[in-house]
Figure 1 (cartoon, helix red, strand yellow):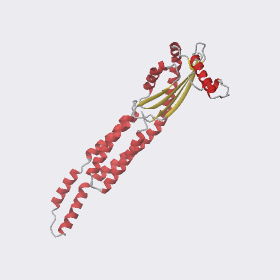
Figure 2 (tube, one colour; figure 1 turned 60 degrees about the horizontal axis):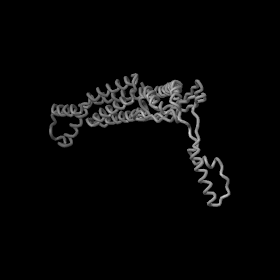
Figure 3 (cartoon, rainbow, N blue to C red; figure 1 turned 30 degrees about the horizontal axis):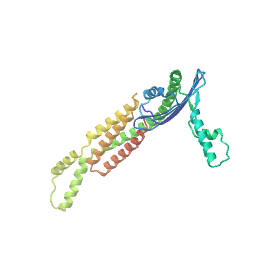
Figure 4 (spheres, rainbow, N blue to C red; figure 1 turned 30 degrees about the vertical axis):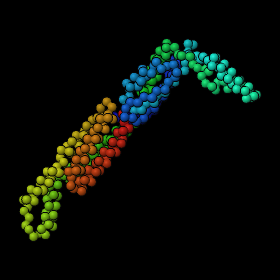
Length: 294
């Protein structure tokens, strides 16, 4: 099954005084890489969140932002660090007196020091109470993300099918051209021997045919053609498989390159070489696209 690794979704769910939002952005990555941002005090839910994401996604850079607004009566509150605030206020007063400043100290000046007002630790029970709502919200966001990834994947799959058809046509032409190699080598040998002997010596047609057959056998690419066709069938099969296909398709493309490289090294015919270069260029285009799928 073809899923794009690039997608976006956001879902919000309200229940029992809780309003939870899950925003997900996914990008290309060789592995599953989850970057999670969530409110202070709910870190105990982090592993469950990542496990849920991993159940739905297998590859990609996943940026997940969880926001939680708790309006229930037992929601977390804030506490003031009075000791720090008094000490900082006294330090500012002493500095003002030392420098003979007439500026009046304000609350804003004290708060700028930071850490004067901090959120109270969220009670573990509050985090546990939030989990069912968060779980449902995240599942909805992941399902929406996968729908978008699947829709984009369908466009990519259609493109792959067209390119596989192009490769199939290339292989058919390569095969047809390779069947003419014995005659091509035979004519080349005749021309070369004729040039070397200046057409004085008599050329043995049987010997020419034998040498041409030896050259053609060394240049035989029938096995590579058979394997390349097998790779196409396997590629199309993996596209329809239910499992994530990205890594397997990438491996198959390496095998495609191996077959076409071998064909190119065996081939001594310019027209055949051009066909092989066209096929390799198409494989490279497919390889670039495969990097975008899960």
